[in-house]
Length: 105
Image (cartoon, rainbow, N blue to C red; front, side, top):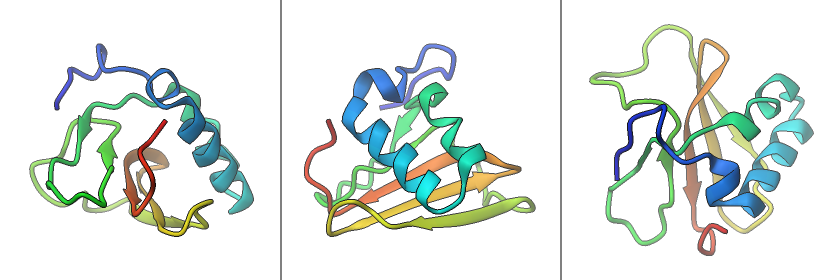
């Protein structure tokens, strides 16, 4: 699923419980500036890899190549037995990796 960024659904509307979990995990990691972005994030495109354990999604259009300079990963302590990793480019959340979690809600 791919959406035009301006028309993509808000993360907080689509998955309100996960939105709160993500913001809390970022805050616990000391990433308050990123946590402040969570309520405004949009689900622009889901991963589409087809793996049943993956619910990852893009919050901005998928780049043609690697993110390049200004990219970093923020590995968070997921509140479930799985993985929660945020890809950040120039201090903006661009991709959220959600692995081995029950269905997002």
